[in-house]
Amino acid sequence: MKRIMNAIKRTGAVSLALILAANMAGCGKKSLLDPKNPVSLTIWHYYNGSQQAAFDALVEEFNDTVGREKGIYVQGYSQGSVPDLEAAVRDAIAGKVGADAMPDIFSSYADTAYEVEQAGALADLSVYLGDEELSKYVDSYIEEGRIASDGTLRIFPTAKSTEIMMINKTDWEPFAAATGVSLEDLRTIEGVAATARIYYEWTDSLTPEVPEDGKAFYGRDAVANYFIIGMQQLGVEIFQVENGEMTLHVPKEELHRLWDNYYVPMVKGYFGAYGSFRSDDVKTGDILAYTGSISSAMYFPDQVESDKDTHAIDYIVMTAPVLEGGKNYAVQQGAGMVVSKSDEKHEYAAVEFLKWFTQAENNLRFGCVSGYLPVMKEANSTEKLDQVIGDQGLAVSPKTYDCLTTIFGQMKDMTLYTNKSFKNGSSARKVLEYNLADKAVEDRQSVLRAIEEGKSLEEASAPYVTEEAFEKWYDSFCDALNKSIDE
Image (cartoon, rainbow, N blue to C red; front, side, top):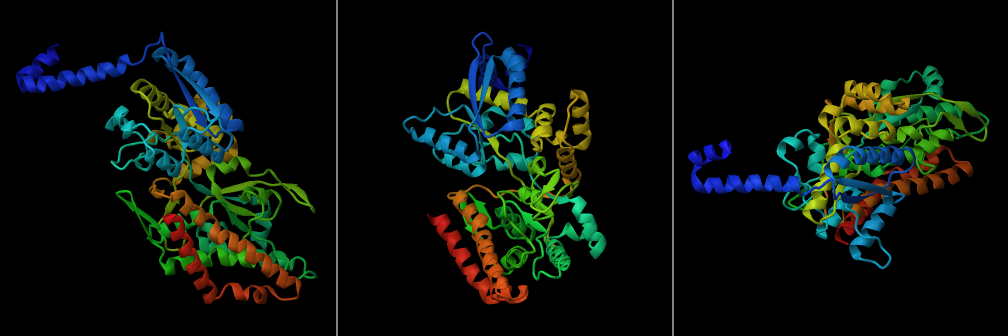
């Protein structure tokens, strides 16, 4: 009352009305929840296995503590995979027969969230979060969530990821000792390509009676990331989005460098892609190293299992290589959570849960199992991670721990980047993911057939690595991108 009377003296009746309205709004938010009549929330996600178990445990803890106190009850449901989740959301929005009702909260990547936002189905989270609260989160994570045309927040960052390089240490060491290569050679993408050629030639030399049977050294998951981040490292934003409008930038010189350092090594057999993921290829002994998400660390094998040999392996974790001379950009990825547009009570309760889930201690507990980065600034440190592990008595996989701490140690020196969302962004990303990768696999098979007919690797691969071959691919690539955007 004293505060209000002082306000009367300072500002008069008009300002008093504004102050009273603000106080009533604040009280109204608090009175939305009633512990005696809890709000029930459903969450759809794509977590499975240990990730789902960790998420479910946190949901249960929330329900038993903060949720019980405030009047919020949360139920989580795994939809299986990311595509399954996206399909379920689209069916719910479309009101398809047999589709479930829209959940209150669901996991979503930016491109899918953008589609749902365009349909007018997402809540504006800015209403429920002040500037001080938002400032506690990693800035680029919050910026990624501002997908509405007016710049308001629609994606709540809950767990993020970037890429690392993982190496089969056990089989790397004899190769390095025999050839003089070092881990420093793997700091750049060009260095990886050069090392991969040496590895191919070295493994080929081990069986002189069989010509051209060298092995691939390296592979990468998410070729789209290679394009987006590689171009960014070279100073080019391939998808430049302003005011919801996307401008495509595909300069030939920069794309030639990406072609030289992915397609050419793939066609020559220095790089490889055989299983569903490159960690699968490490397990079968088809490659020694790969670039992939930090969450893939849990799938890095403990042994190589091939037709000829089975043996235990150790691992090395490094930051993802950067194009030589390029800026130190790294991909920012990982789904956030979005809140379905409904009523103020459900939206407010949903944000209360998400704020609790992303508190440093809770978020790190999830990250220790899932391999995801926490989203609050204070949580992104080895010291904080060690504190949570000690306080909670957590058992953390050494691979996951090493991946998290490797990134924590480099976050000040790298810039995390993800392109802004735009219409048909998912289709455009698919072109980046499959256009060159599929061509590389197909052309590699043609090279192998030519080798079987008696040609050397250089003779067999020569038609595929000419300037004419690049020009032809470049034109088809640009056409495919433009069609995906305009469809």
